Length: 405
Length: 227
Image 1 (cartoon, each protein chain N blue to C red):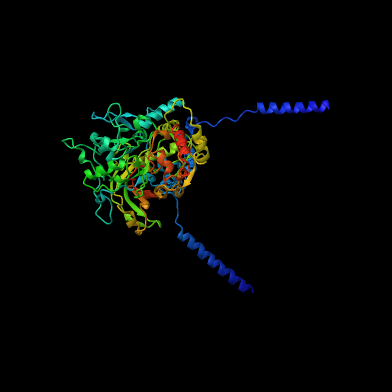
Image 2 (cartoon, rainbow over the protein chains, first blue to last red):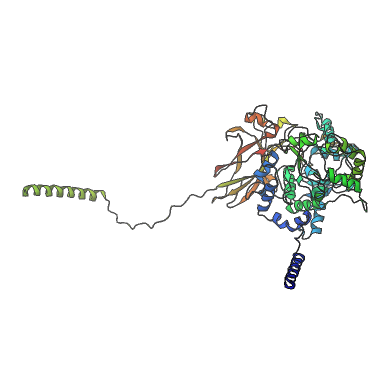
């Protein structure tokens, strides 16, 4: 009896020791850290990793937007791999003569701080695209307030830079910060930016028909080149670190964090006329930086626990708190908002992604079509029907909770 | 019997002697030293090799007169392509500082970027892009697009057509893209805008090198909006 009891005691002790000594699996690094650790895979001449991230990230290779990347990007010895690299010479927007300096000093960062600093420079200073109407708008400060162009501390248009393009011409280009840096806060959508209105005004100044651009509205941009009016709300970028998809329709899946750099690199190639590619250190740094963005903090707050209970019961099945309150794809018809962009022949998937709610407290309008001006409207409108069955007090608590995110 | 044998042997002897005599008559007496064997010298020539890198079909939304709309006179080489506003960029002010002289919104010439190599034994002279053809989905030629200019990269200087042995260069070719690709390809009105794309066949020749051609994958028009 005593011997049997001793054996049991020994076995129990062994079980406890085994459990205590088994090391816990290392947590997955956050995306920005992952980027720092895998930079070499992207930067090397061999395009294998880049091609792999592209292929694993596309929703469908037959969408016209994806197809051209499939046909041209990350292929050894052909296509965009052979494009000349252009290290943009940039200068601030001013009346002074252009004195361009290379945006990248040629020194590849070796630590996270270095990558983030280079990414911050790319976010605000790397010209993503040149458009004649933006160059016209940049020359007319009297129109900036009307079309949502902000001024930086020096009075220049925030997010615009002068640069020398692939043909040696000095142009004006918009950086990420132009649309995603309201009030100088990286990642915050500029919801006053009226690019459609600016386009229409530019065309009228040329004696041309304004077209349908003025129908976009502030904070909205049509990014699908399919001659269908389907503008989408300029998104906040704070969810990039946690969400599963880029683009409202989910046409790019973040299967591996590196897909962001591929996405940015191909954007620059296309938007600069397929003539050059940017230095890959810049696009990698930019992606790393975007993954690091966080919404403004509220400081010490006591979360509305009642609202949190309502959220967990009614919202968390789509807006997963463990994923920055984001989720997967939902059929466009199920959320009742404008389905047009989900049907685009260039990027449509028939669905919309469930966006992250990080930074939702910074204000509306909400939804991809900006149809909900505030949280109250979001939870009572037909565009997002999931809040309609919530009783008044619960809804008030929920809104207070959301305003703390 | 003996007589028969004699006649047969005599006939054979006669034939043999005649044959031998003929051979001797036909063969010239060769008394010179045989020449040492040498391999036949291959004629040196330039040989071009081309690779398609990238390109687009332009954007002529606001300037259709500058794009290709069917059979028309080819535009002279060196003509400023659509949308090119000159050295000062797209929004050079007029003398009174008025920026309203800016160019139209959506106006950009088509271009392709190519890599060219000379894998021959002679420097190529006068290399140039001779044709840019639009192919339909059956690889049938549907149009020949007017070529504006060919620039050497990254200098952007006009390419002079020279290519040394073993050299590899990149060039960019500006040309007039189609205003309405659907019409050129014979698609009906039900075709959607997003299909404004086609494969191209690019022909390249030098004065001293055979013509080569490069077939591209689908080339699209230049987007009007951010992608």
